[in-house]
Length: 244
Image (cartoon, rainbow, N blue to C red; front, side):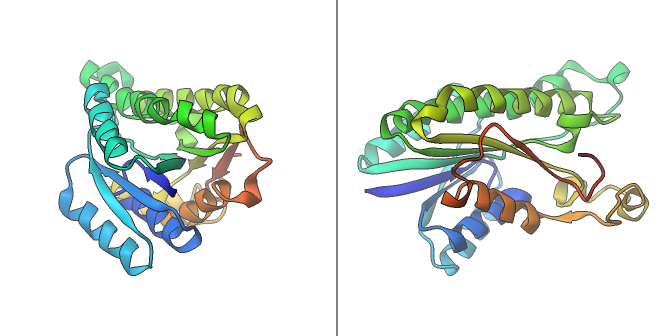
């Protein structure tokens, strides 16, 4: 039986780092989801393969329930003996701006990517996990979802709801040996934060620096491992001390 891990938004940034770390730390066949950046996704795939893991790309928009189910159903039909044991819900976008001027489209897109993405992918696999009596689900939240961030009402709402969903689902599935946890990164050096004034913002962080995607990936890899088998319903802050 081929055991698999799926990582949404796996083509760049934190998602890519997670794919690479799971390639090193686990024996899972990796399903790397991406929406539109095929070249970046291919780079991730090639790097994962160089690290000795097997992997494949799955192109679909996590916010589109029908498309998500079509792609995952086709994959499952073509891989009848495959079993997804790990889900990393990493896909997310930002559309920052003060709430008073925020267009509905910016509100909707951010919430749908995080929340519908979590539902569409996790819901597809959860019954199979329950029947198999094993699973690891890790949701990538944010410091914005646990403390709220000015100029990110939409992002804070989405990630805060993801935190609550993590805690609730963890209670539903714990008896079947399925853990559900969230990681809440602070400022991490990625494409998403490239436009920020890192020097200025680092003064707010007790550790005095932005985090690295690799540091988040190490945490996710631990949470999907056997070493974390008694940890569930938790939100692990990884933010250099800016909030805990």
